[in-house]
Length: 417
Ligand code: GDP
Image 1 (cartoon, rainbow, N blue to C red):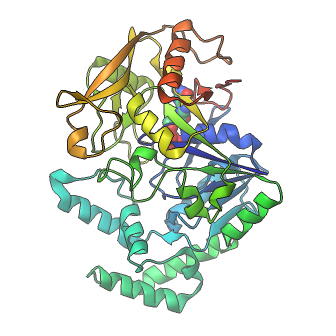
Image 2 (cartoon, rainbow, N blue to C red):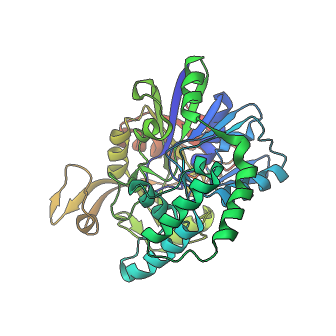
Image 3 (cartoon, rainbow, N blue to C red):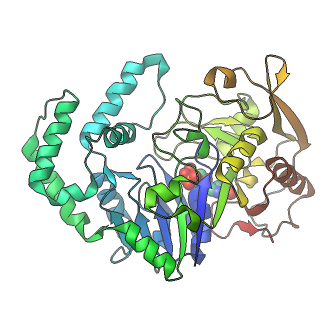
């Protein structure tokens, strides 16, 4: 009986899906607890590529049960399409996917609102993925929202949906069409509807291993991230409990994932961002373009100040460092070890966006390596400079490194003893 929470600890895109997939081999259950289809995960298995937005990536293991918890918001149409495309790749869902009936619904109206809101923000835009996640969470909080289980009650659904359009001052253009589309999508998804919290608690007590899969990253957490440039849900370790209905005292271990360098998509402060040829080289080598939006990601050096903050916030037991292979060929590498603001060194992370925008990072510079790491399977076999780089990260973040990823494939992973 054990539970493991796996989280991205920066601004998302840390390679969570690959690590969850790697660790998933030891799990009986993989559960998503927050976010929606704004997550874009890619897993490569024996050269074959699978893309996930809402489905937990544990589905690639034929025996693993997968849960979409009450703390998520799901676009039923997108989920159906994602499932169909995975079914076309021979993934079997029957009896293995459990969607909590209390998960919030992302409806076509939310996508429309997302676009309208972002347009209105103009220069102050947040850089959302435009998937309607923010408006859907806002409706949950204002109690106007609809939930997955509402789809089974057509009259209730009609009433709630009419009220929802009204609450936004929008005219419901095609009620019959929308209701029949929702009816159809429910017929597809109904076999997977569940009281997932009850099941997960029961499985845990029966001795199963539960892996909780976070989406986005800790610096995008609604409360503790770089607000307002954040996602609309809580992404830190504590939200596992709230998003599944899983007692906090049963949260046994938390593994945080950090990329070997930093990236950020969309707007918002990014103290270690770089704009030179090195940034272009990393972007190209790491294919740093959003899986959901295709936007080029901003690139920066590893920020150990931010990393230590999120390690502490999440109470990490261990960390995984991903995409180490991408840094090969650079003459030198930098790690941010301190934040300076208006001539003063800060004791830790800065919280206000106006302060973060002015931070002067203090850097440790380390020599790079030329070797290709893709085929390396042990820490000792890594070039000495790569080992030193990892050691510096571990020392600065103050959490032991347990996993190092040197390529996209499940196999290209080093477990640190
Ligand atoms: P997630 O949202 O955190 O799961 O991150 P993404 O799906 O955006 O993952 C980043 C991309 O990096 C994906 O295309 C992965 O296949 C790939 N990836 C993950 N780990 C590694 C790694 O160690 N090296 C390389 N080269 N690619 C990786």
